[in-house]
Image 1 (tube, rainbow, N blue to C red):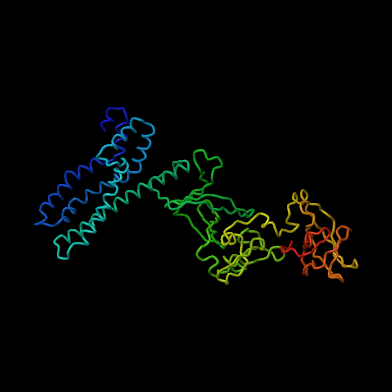
Image 2: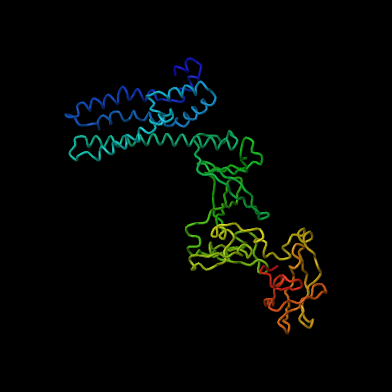
Length: 466
């Protein structure tokens, strides 16, 4: 403070902000608390009590709350002024070199008052525990301990209030400091990202929610985050808000006077249960679309399947994965992609996701740009009879693989082989490469035969129907 008054190192206001009410705390201890305890120690033989002294002075210990509340800001000020003012930095270094500092930093000594009340509580607990049952100080000491506990609670409450206001101010800055939102009496309960479900095109978009004690803010992340991080699109008062759970897990409706929102939260799987216990299956008749990709089900092209890990009703594409489940003796079971990633601990490669797409699921640009479109494919036996024509595509990057819109009518030859005709050209499969017997499926796939030999093809039913 002497250096500050000289006006060379740091303003006086900064020094006061750094040390808060430490002078008042010091005066209380040096003029009241310490003399009272010293006097009692001198008369200990005839009056072995300290509980009454602590009871009398404990209410004044609440002044520590102000110091504790200011501590983080004080340490930050020391750091800032040490960087911007070399004379201030030299002053701090000079003080820390003194013998009375015991080679400790100024910040270390400033932490001592923060720890003082918890230490009083621990010391008094130990004192009460060691007192004999017949001690004349037992009742007063127990009452003093209760008062010290309340003082510590007061300090913790001061810290919590300080943190609440700081967090609230940060939130208001992220929202752009709108006048009708900024209120220090508000309490932030929870915040986080949310998916907004569009009923028009069955798509989702990422939004963000801030739930306060009196309102829910429905926000949109700004593309260019200069200043505010979010833009408030809707404000719903809690008093008039209604929340109703929807059919899909983690999906709910939030209704206000002006608007109703359908939202979906992405919750992590229950790590302690997934794969270890059999899940409760969602009933088929309760779900009209895949609970992962949200594509509608139908009896022909998109059938219902159950994930054996989470119990969700999903389509074939979203459940085309196998993972070991503990509750089923570590046998491989059909699981959805999300559970597969969680249980196996690695992501799904793009080529894995595209594995079972049929011809009609290919993008038009992909078919025309990367494939050779041919007119027909006819599977023939050794004598050149039978077979049904169908459209097919041969990818340019793998000319021995084709996708066909027709189930092959494959007839085995006398030598165990089959014959396939591609656009008039005939190719014979190698023995032992007989295609699987295909049920009437609306699509098929011919692949390169054993060893990828040219001219050797194998027809097999594609797992995902068209």
